[in-house]
Amino acid sequence: MYDTLARIEEQLAEIELECLRRTYIATRPKFLDRAGAIEAIPDFWSTVIDEAPPEIDQRIQPRDVAALSCLSDVDVERFEVQDAEHGEPRSVKLRFTFTPNDWFTNEKLEKKFYWRMSKHGWSGLVSDPVSIQWKDRDLTEGLLDMAVKLWKREQQLKDSGQTRNDAISTDEYKALIEKVERTPQDAISIFAFFGFRGHGISARESEEAVSRKRRIAEGAAQWEEVDKESPPLPDTEIYPHGEEVAVAFCEDLYPGATQYFTAAKERDAKVSDEELVSDSESSGESDDLQDEEHENRSNKKPMISG
Image 1 (cartoon, rainbow, N blue to C red):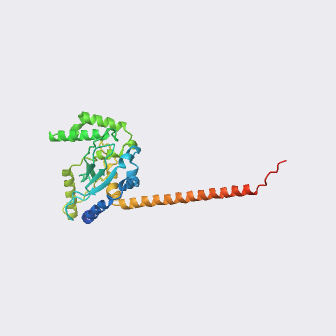
Image 2: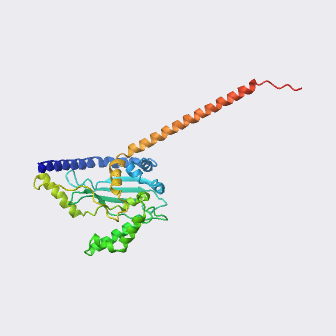
Image 3: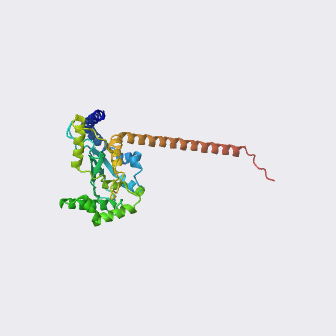
């Protein structure tokens, strides 16, 4: 009974993935057309960011606002999609383009998120940290640079046949752990998002887990109950909300950017109209008071001396 139900669920999941691939292939050219049209609209993306959904808005610190106002383009690419039947559509690449600014020299910041599944059943996004070339002030206060240094150190260890666990004894690991422990989560810049890594699920482990799911869907393997709850993130994770923010950009802010921009402009126009009416009413009340004062003066009897 459970095998049959699991097989049907996996078949439905495959259909949903195919629909996502087809939707992406069909809409991608139109989103590129939209990007061309947006280039002629001043402050489009900074206005959209001001209207961002809570998953993004609540992560923006006051010190981030000025830098985000320099955002000139946002793009979402499902880079692993090959055609309607091949490629993982849940893997995404976010590309942010900025005008010249006082915070960093990067014109573009790109971050790839790979959809992964563990052998224990968890699935979600993982990523590699991306460095930002800061000018005078690092908005992440050193967190991002330290995360990048640890990641590079781990790559060196990997090349020499060691594992990620071997990094625990390194200076880079110890320094980052200390920094994370001293930094309040609610005070972290949204630019630390570029340091998000997530769970260390390798491409090989994910491929094996996905292959098993396919075999279940085809009836070639038996269903087994697994714990799909997310395991704890590594202690060195500098941005635990990274997946949530990435999904909000890809599935909400980016596709709905025009609606967010239009809503902001309509609200601004409404506020301007209300202020105009308020100013007009205030002016009218002032004129009425002046007329009343003039009438009162006219009705006064002149004083007769001696």
